[in-house]
Image 1 (cartoon, rainbow, N blue to C red):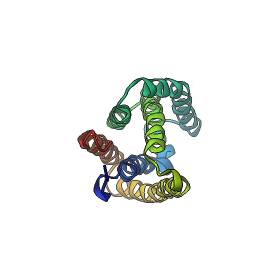
Image 2 (image 1 turned 90 degrees about the vertical axis):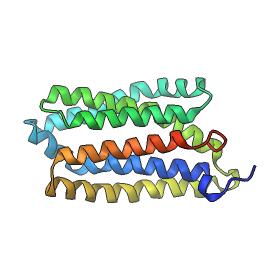
Image 3 (image 1 turned 120 degrees about the vertical axis):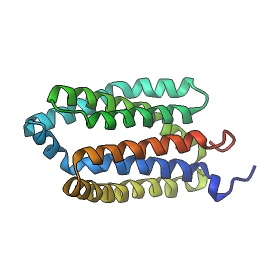
Image 4 (image 1 turned 180 degrees about the vertical axis):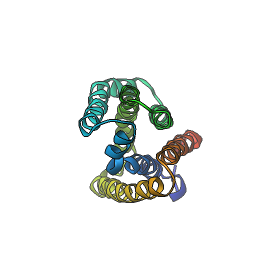
Length: 188
């Protein structure tokens, strides 16, 4: 079966993941300001970032095992995006460092859940003769979406609020999850 540009699995997963990365990048450079806004310190900002990374690291192997057991890996990616979406929605309710720690664990689990499945799908659908180019495209998109996300996040928080940014971040993750869900089974 020939797959056209519109239904190219690599294109689909690169674009949807770029949207999630864009959302995530919105918070990155201004995260410490958010922690300070809820009464936290720079050390607590570092602690919550570390908790995110540890929770993702501890659950990444589990995410990989689940990905290997589920035939349709796209559903693992969808669930991961949905968990991240939930985490970003919960960020709108964060008023204490303790609740922020819990939200960071949730977001870390979402990342750990979808990343092994994403990598597996990318490997499965990549053109073996052009894997370097395709991974290069993904890596370039990572940096470009990070740059754009950082600017958009700063602009939204400056002009509106952190809450508006968190809602947009959640919406972007939801859109990516929904799009992958709607992709026909024969394509992805």
